[in-house]
Image (cartoon, rainbow, N blue to C red; front, side, top):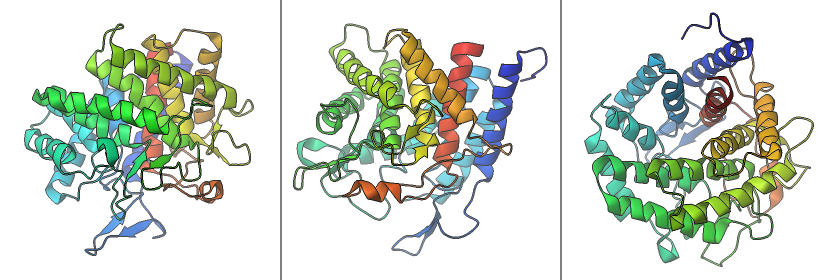
Length: 366
């Protein structure tokens, strides 16, 4: 897309988006600090573009809004390589299948075999908690009987989309149930925010952390899910999800840092550091909730999204790296554990910034 004869702000946003994409596909662990060795000896670069946990959804959204063909080309090349290599299945490695399902639906590639394999694993082989929740299994840890808030984005949304693409309504019904089950056990009744994790093994919320990035995946996932399934305004599941989302966004408006527009990594703890990837997710989710009319177009919501957008822009370097991004974060028994997580560039940070900027572009600049 040419940036000639368009507004200066739109040109700036498009430039940032292209820089974010360039940084995303070239990101890697130069120090060895963030390499992960699996039991079979496989070494995973958890920062790298070629990791199976890489985030491609921002590329898809950029193409959706601008028609940018390079974004699709990058995603197709990634899948060509990664499907050849393969990986073990877990909550996070399921996440790219959401983008794969969209690409398959648009006939960019034939991923039917892969979509079938991964969705069937979620439905029938993925470990479950009590009440049939998706247990948050990762590369190294089973997280026995644990529900985490990021599971909805990483595994449940892909399952729903694959259900639509392959014509399997039972996948969609299972996805609905997972959303309701996660709300039941993870949304804090007092604040409206979400706890990072819940375990049925002892029945508690660990350190009761209202963790920023985990919350942002929810702010993204609920509007995406409602739009994906085209749930009518009178649908009971939609009404349930909307009330949950609004309660969360009301709390986010309250806790946003007024000076920077960012949120703290523990949202209600101002002694924890400010974190940009969560802020990008909140920016996208609030803007999309406004666009879909899931929340009323009130000044407090619009202003929160705009301040978040400015906060994200302020943390993108000239080379396209989103700064103030916390590394991968397990559920901790204490709040202090979250405060010790290092800050470093990450693929999900790049993709979350892409989502925020593309949604801002769509809402205000298209």
